[in-house]
Structures are given as C-alpha cells and as structure tokens.
Amino acid sequence: MWFLFGISNVLYYLIYHIIKYRRKIVRKNLTRSFPEKSSEEIIKIEKEFYSYFTDLMVEIVKMSSISKAEVRKRVKVKNFELAEAYFERGESALACTGHYCNWELGMMGAGLSFSAKSNVIYKPINNKIFEKWFNALRTKFGNVFVPMRQTLREVIATKNETTLFCFASDQSPTAQDTQHVINFMHQPTSVLVGLEKIAKQTNRPIFYFDVKRVKRGYYEVECIPMCINPKETEEYEITSLFFEHLTKTIQRDAAYWLWSHNRWKANL
Image (cartoon, rainbow, N blue to C red; front, side, top):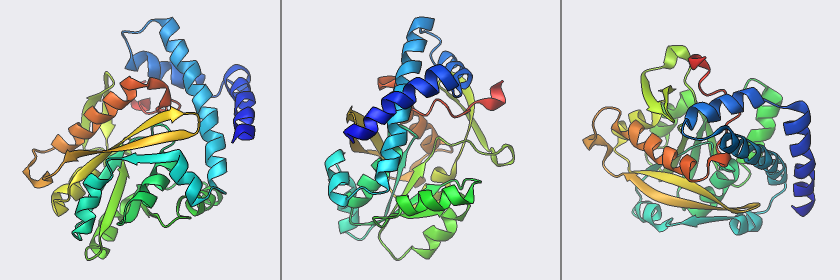
C-alpha cells in the first residue's frame, strides 16, 4: 500500500492541478452544500477531497488482490453484535450507507463480519467490461450484488434464508423514477425510496453503517440501529432518517463523500 499511496500522491497532482477533473462540479456541490463556509474553507475541503479521491482509486485497485486477513485488519466493524443478534435467531435485517469513504472496502469488511448472507444493492453501469471487473472484485469473499431493479425479486427468493440487504441510498433516481424530494445539504434533492419500501414490506430492522476513516487505508464501520420497527413509521420517515444520519456523517468529515458525482444536476 505504501507504493500505491505514492502513486496516489502523483495522481492527485495530475487530476487536481493539471486535468482538473470535474472541479467545477465539486466546487459547485461544496459551495451549495456549505453556504456558511468561506471560499478558502471550500477550497481546503476540495483539495482534501481530491487527495482522498486518488487514495480511493488505488485502494480499489488493491482490492482485486487483497486477502481476507488484510480486509479484517483494515476494516473494523464496531457494534456488529447488534445486528448479529438478529442473525443468530435466524432473522434477517437491512442496512444502509452512503458513498462515503471507501464504501466498497467497507461493504467487503461488513460481509466478512456477519454470519448472514450479505446482498448489496447496486446500480449497474453502462460499461459492461468495467462492470464485470468490478463485480468480480466485489463478490470475491461471498457478497452477492443485486441490480437495483431486481431487489424485491431477490428479497422474495431469499425469504427463507438469513440475509442482510445493504443499500447505498444516496444515489440519484432517474426523472421517471422520482417519487420523493427532500432538503439534503441545503438543496432540494430527488431520492430513492427503495429501502423504505422493502423495509415496510418485510418489517426487517434497519442499521445505518457509519464509516470513518481512521488513517490512510484503515476504516471503522459502526453499526447503528436506525429503525427497528419499519411498519410503525410514517410515510418517508425512514428515508428522512437515512439522510439525517448521512448529513451528520458528511458534516463530521466533509472531504470523504463523493463530491465529484453531479448529484444535483437537476438544480442547475
């Protein structure tokens, strides 16, 4: 990893200063999300984001050859026994997180920590060669990756198994799939409601995976009970709970969220 992080240092200079990859999008996203911050503070977060973004790139490359022992060393799951208690009773659960820190490595570490079968919901990408490589990397230790539109089908197919379905719920829905808009990071934001729908249909408890970067290449995933009885919630309450948790995570260390994604392109 020391060698890869050396490459990351070079990539940071190239991507941020020379190529200027998506700098306008990142600057726009940060400025609108933190209206209380000065331009100097925004640029500081921006540089920290790009420095981490290149670390993330080389960490994902490393994941193609990483061992289980190395994953367990680099990803510590805190309070995992709160979810594991359900699995020991043969009950299933749901989890949610955002595109924060190395979510790929975090999901790999979580999958190794729980006895339940881990099913991660993902949004397929257009480049099929890249997607095939990515899915081989993601599933190497037993995690199952389920295309977003097949979630309910997979939940039904595995109803007699003990499972953990994990949702990255900060992705953007398409215009035709938009069902709900919230205020997130000071901006009107179209959000996915798939987690809430599955939770209410199954009444499975939901845990929020709060990811922290401990140091370069090392992470902690805290398992936080978010909603234990989904059927008792009001409409869109679960969705709001997730974004409340994610907002706190981002505000704690802003540089580690995926600011290069054009999350609010509809707001231009």
